[in-house]
Length: 493
Image (cartoon, rainbow, N blue to C red; front, side, top):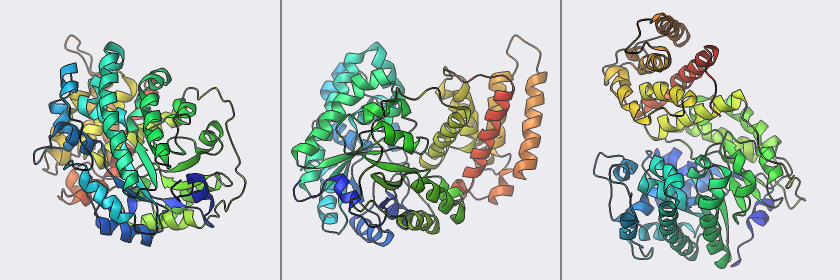
C-alpha cells in the first residue's frame, strides 16, 4: 500500500486508543462557521497535532462537487445548498448538461488538492475527503425529488448518480495521488434509503469509489449519518476498510454485524460538546470506549464537531478517549454474527433520532427554534407532512423576527399542537387544542423559567446566543413528543 499501513494495522499500532473528532480541531480552534469546508492548511496541521487527532481530514464536500459540475456558486447571502434547490437538476437534459471537471485544473477542485499535498507533509495521515455520489446527486436534484424519483423515474436517478460518481472517483484518485493516505467518503443520504433501494442506488457507486482506493493501493472509510442500522451488513460490503457511524447507532451491534477486520469510527453525539458539562462528556466518552475494548476502533464523534464547540469540551472528549488502551496488535474480537437485521426502533431510539436530527438542523443549517419545534414533532408523527410549511414558523424566530418577544420555541410548539388538534374550517370544537396549548405554555414557563426571548438572550441574536438556545429546542421537542404520544398519536411504520 504505497508504504502506507492498512487502516487496521495503523489503528492497531497505537499504544493508546486513537481519537478522531471529525473535522474538529480546526473547527473548534478557528471558530469556523458552518459554511467553512475544513479550514486552511496551517489550522489543519497545527490543531491536528495539538489535539492528538489520529487523522487530518481535508478535501471537498457535496457543494464543492456540485459547483464543479455546474459552474454555479451561491449568490452572496444565499445558503449554498439552497442555490441548487432553487434551480435543480430535474431532467435527463439537465443531467447531460453537467460538466465532468478535471480535478487537477478545475477552479473548484484543484485548490483542495494543494491543501492535501501541503498537509500530507505533517506527521498525521491525511483522510482525503469526498462526498458520496448519492449525496452529491441529492444536492443537485433536491433530496425530496431524488427520493421520489427512485420510485417514479429510477433511470434518471441512476444516470445522475453515475455522473456524480465520475466526479467523485476522479477526485478520489487525485486526492490519493496528492498525498492522502486513506479515503474518507461521506454519504449521509444513505440513511434515507431502505435496504432494497440502497442495494440498487447506493452500493454500486460506492463499490466503484472504494475500488479507486484499492487501485491506488490505499483503503477508505465510509461515513454515514442517521440511524443506518437496517443497512449495516450492506455498508460492510461496499469495499470500505472502515465504517463511521452516527450517534444513534449501536456500536457493539454494528461491530458484530460487520466484517471482523472492519475498523469502526464513532460515535459521540456532536451536540453533547455544546450542551453538556465537561464531566458529563467524560462520563459518556468513558462508557462509549469501554464497550469497544478489544475491537478495531477509533473513538470519534458521530458527525462533524459543531462550529463554536468549546475547547474544554473537545479536550475532555479527546483526553478521556485517548487515555484508554489501544489494540497494540492484539487479536480482534467480534465479527459478523449473521444477524437478520434490526427490528422496529424502540421509543427512546425514535425520540433520540428526532432530537439529533433537530439539533443538527438547528446548529448546522441555522434553523430557528420556532421552525424546528413546529416541524420536527409534525414530521415525527405524520409522514405526509408538507415540509414547506416550515415557512409558517419562520417569522417567529428570535422572539418574532428578532424582536426578542415571545420565544419561538413557545410559538412553534403551539403550532405543532394546532396542526394535530386545532379545529378545522368546518368544525367549532377547540377545547382540546386550547387545553393542550395552555398546558404547554404553563410547562414551558415553569420548566424553562421564561417565555420571552429577551429573558433568555438579553436581546442579542448572534451565533453564541443561537447555540446557547440548543438545550431549549431539545427540551421543548422532547416534551412535545411526550404530549403527542400521551394524546394517542402512533409512530408511523
